[in-house]
Image (cartoon, rainbow, N blue to C red; front, side, top):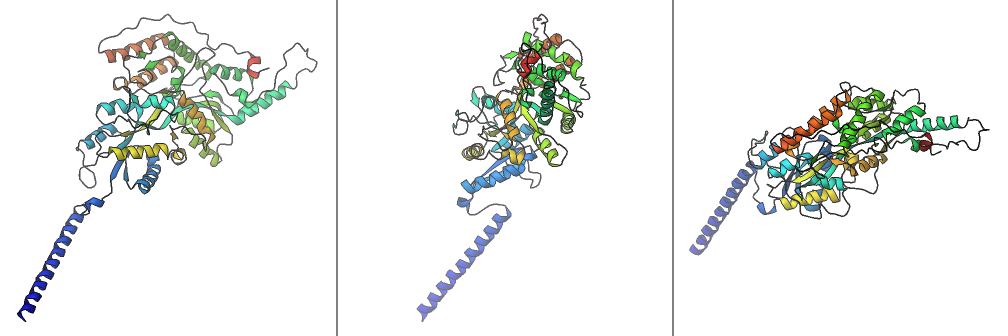
Length: 487
């Protein structure tokens, strides 16, 4: 009997201990939930964080983050941040100096972030950019054009992965070119049928023959052919923005060499660069565009309205024009071609900006961050343009929009915007230089002063250029009519 009572007491104590243990576990669990922690630490999924500044990427990045999670079980948290002092914000978060505006807790730093290539030197020197050595991400198999690889190269290292780009191209009204060609062919058909066999017989021309190889061609076309009634401008571009002007001089100057990172490779003032800007200045008499009134959006709208045949535009124009067509505002076909040379002697080259995926050197999840970058580059770039309007830096066999190919072609031949911090003001100074030259100041003098200013900044002491004899430039060497129409 006593043995049974003792056994019951033991069982009762055991049950009480079980209940107390359960209560203690429940209290710990509730406390941990309140503090935002998990008791099951071993099953907590890895999370990496991606920062970016362009809201046009939001849906795309969230879509890819979910797909990446389904494939790898690695979470990706995306965060849209202000582009103002962007690298400073990344640096402060990486050093634990930033609090979340909502929770008040320390803001986790990004493991991956998207930044334009001109900021890569600054990012690398601040310790915010990992030298990518994984050849599965950046691989020399022709996946990227050389311009993309140049854009991410710094001091012989790849410190990012090209994601998408912006560059300029020649955009033309294809419908108008077909009308001009048809009108010219009709006029040619009315020539005297009894003309001597020794006289030139003009061949039939097509719209493709009117896609200019040079600005000289454009001026000759304007002189040779009549235009549709609605046309107000044969050729018009934004002369106030260096992005649309740079191609005039881009083939003859260098700021930092091919990769834009070598302060010893500066060549701005030379005979060819002066020649191009002397021609640029004389173009004002043909196109009568005022820098103060020049505006890119207005110029694209004029193209949409059918007032312009040729213009220089960036790839953002594709969505604008296609939307206008869908709304019934653009009633034409259009095409995208290589930037025109100046003439048969002076060659052009445009500028490009490449937005780059960078892995934060401070990241505790570098391997997972690398896997996500690799995933975006290798598997998920085909629908980037459709979802964002951004053109992938990865070359593709086919593009859903035929106009994209023209910008890709120009990107492959472009000069990446330099990444040197000490020359970050060069673009503003070059834009001012172009504006002054367009409005009549001496091209030779302005370019020499610009070169001296940039070289002085880098040297830390005054640098004077030896003046170049003013080159004699034939504005636009005449193009024979029979060459144009292949007669």
